[in-house]
Length: 445
Image 1 (cartoon, rainbow, N blue to C red):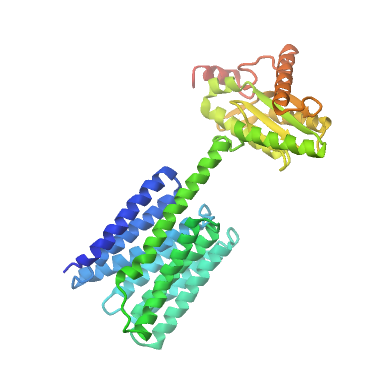
Image 2 (cartoon, rainbow, N blue to C red; image 1 turned 90 degrees about the horizontal axis):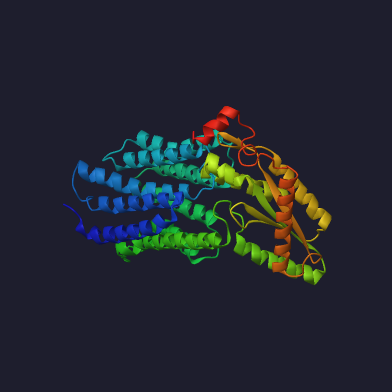
């Protein structure tokens, strides 16, 4: 006998999962894939509920699949929200939580589970996560990890006390297990997405309501049995969480699009649009305080040769390395921007002077003369730099940029004339390679 009454719930969750997948596909984030897997688990949960009335082992198997899928979905939601997923012990904690929860559900779903098996499974729910946390405490000691360990240790103690108290408390044990999982989701999402947005509020509130279902429902059965609520009411928090997660993905995509509109996608530095805005603001502050602002325009030498001989991938690595070097050299109050293919601009704000700007420029040139290790290749480049100071060289933004640009080209012409870049084209970027390696690179090896 199949309970077709669960079919509308399954259809609703399937539609939400499809909508979630459509939104997540454009985001291409690892967390969205984990969330999508969780919602597939929720859909599997509703599909298994349809077969609960089937008598015999098939009904027991459907119970195990349905409950395990529901719990695994919550564990995946939690794991997707931890900031340390890349830690070596993080996958071990995930496997531990998935395994111990599935083991307890398997024992609980049995027709007549032995008391010792229930006690062992309940003990492992707390002992194994605690063991993983203690073993890896030197590498990872995060409050969020200890929160989940404390939750599961508390759950383990509660299940053992309930079992030794006697009586058939399988329903109470199941509710306690589900409450722990989804209250843990509420904690993790609160830490990860604590911001004033509709998506964050709806998702966190939805998980809190979802966890509360497993407390309020048994309390109503015990103290107000005359009050009857349809199952759709208890399933409502699931839909709230799904909508909240979709909003979170949309909010993240909007923020990412805003970032890309003002930043260079390759290096993450401000692009020309944001650079002009910051330079305008810097000049306005300098006018109000009667101070100086320096503009440094840096053009990389030999960049085209690196692209031609070693490929665009190596050229991209070079640009990323240069941007990292520049950002590490200036102050937080200053701005480093990528304004062209191999052109960078640096805005030095108060306190600064021409002498300060020249020292920064010399240090940047010195850093660029050092060999860069880029994958299998080592390249050595140089740069030409133009420095203009407000208000000494120009009183307007456009005139200041032109002054810096002219001085950069004058520096480039002077360096080419005095032989500073002799051998430009191959020798400079390939200085760290042997002649045979350079010859091989000419033919694309």
